[in-house]
Amino acid sequence: MTYECISVAREDRVGIVTLNRPKILNALNLQLVSELVHELERLDNDPDIGAILLTGGDKAFAAGADINEMAEASAIEIMKRDQFAVWDRISRISKPIVGAVSGFALGGGCELMMNCDIVIASETAVIGQPEIKLGVMPGAGGTQRLVRAVGLRKAMEMLLTGEPISAQEALRCGLVNRVVPVEAYFREALKLAKQIAAQPPLAVQVIKKAALKAEDLPLQDGMDYERNGFYLLLASEDRREGMQAFLEKRKPRFTGN
Ligand code: CO8
Image (cartoon, rainbow, N blue to C red; front, side, top):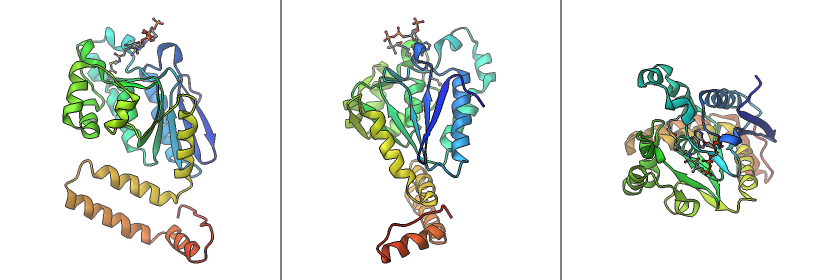
């Protein structure tokens, strides 16, 4: 499939997806989201890929849903589009997604960033949920994921004022993992994605899934879930290889089995 709104590349075992509508600050139209989900699922099914890097441009990760596409549409038309059915598939990607975020990450852009498992931000990142200023509200997880990420009070302030926060503030409240100069954010994120992609693939996916369960499940249910994953990995060939390599003082060769 050829893409118009994203570009794709690959380095070692990392699939790199770049949002690519720079003139309009990577505003998320239906086509972009559909291409993005198609590519994420393709990478998820590719055994030669161990992690995904999702990025935009230096000026904008994504400035939100494409307002041109929403401005004239009726509520019923938007409901019938059921665009969230596609969107929700992003949260079912089983491989880790590292976000490399610079410039504007607003509205749907912030929601997309929150779908990343780890985020490296540039010092220039501006992050927020400005929907209230348009007379609407977040629709792709903004109220739910932001509260979980930064806590109720901080999220409430961001959601009700619509004012964005800086990269440093996002770091303080746990919304991003690391803030680096704009020249370095992509490189840092790629380095991290490569490090994860070199880990045993089964363990990576089972750990990601279990960690995400912590947001939904009561503690004991989460512990039970974790334990099942633990036993499952004990049955893997990579577990045998990992432990054998440790005992033989050599580098392990993981196969994903
Ligand atoms: N939609 C459409 N076009 C946009 C968007 C957008 N979200 N953001 C920027 N653009 C366009 C501008 O219209 C402008 O186009 P043109 O050159 O033709 O005039 C171009 O991008 C450059 O933008 P600016 O000239 O405004 O650049 P500035 O640096 O002056 O300002 C801002 C940058 C502050 C980011 C400003 O553009 C802005 O406020 N943008 C809108 C941000 C916003 O409100 N986002 C939330 C949208 S609603 C939403 O996301 C709901 C999510 C629901 C779920 C979505 C699932 C996909």
